[in-house]
Amino acid sequence: MTSFYRNTIFAACCLAMLASCEKKTTDLDKLEAKKTGISAEKVYPLAGNDMSTNILPKKNLPAAVLTNYYDVKVKLIDTVCDEYLKETRKFDISKLKDGEFTYDIKDKKITLSSTMGFKKLNNGPKGWWTHWNYSPYTESEYPNVLFAESEEGFVSNVMILNLNKKVTTFGFEIAPNATGMDLNVNVSYQEEDSKLENELFSVNQTVSAPSGARLIAVKSQTPFKKITIVLENKKPELPGLAISNIRYTLAK
Image 1 (cartoon, rainbow, N blue to C red):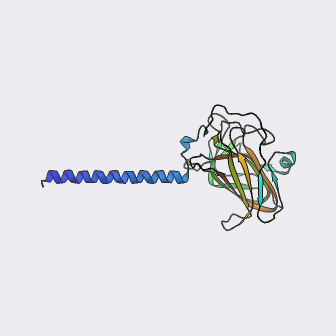
Image 2: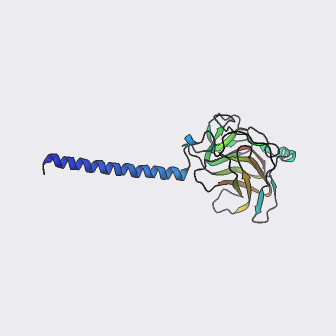
Image 3: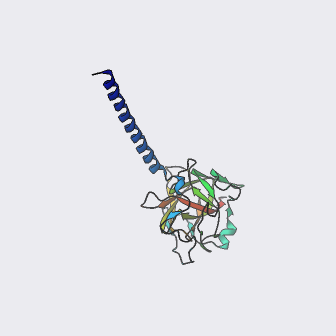
């Protein structure tokens, strides 16, 4: 076999191996993206079935459901009332810039951290463009929100929140980053930030967008400091969730 043919065959083999390696790398990238979340490029505007309007008429919505695992004395709050507003302090996210990423937000007395982090979005065409909801289901109709997104730009249907101090009351409003779908959200509460710590209780609520954000708040006799939010969906491509109007009462 001449040197020319040997070199030609060698080059062809190298190209085939390179193409195979590139394909494997691409497949791994796709797998990692599927595990982590959806690229942030697909987030804005909100995805979903119906994007013809950013607001729907007010309607009666179902009550949240509380599941108590250890007979903890706990009160479920799923509509905004004066008593809830007076007894709690709200985290102020107005100082965060539009689109700013952060792992935690702070009040004078407490810090709330997210293991994944979140991005602050203003209400508008380049942020959270849909109507949040009406009173008494939410505190405000067009709030700024914290969107579940990592620093690398991936989003998630899970948000794990940790407080550096225990609270007895904790509440937030939540909506899915998808329109035209009624979706269940499950929120669980633990005394400590530990994988071995059992859940005290959990709450299930139906949320949607637009005009379908819901308040999920609890007042517990047993203080807690970890909250896990899971937006349940059979379609893994659902691009995340957002929360707003986060309130708390410190344990004494």
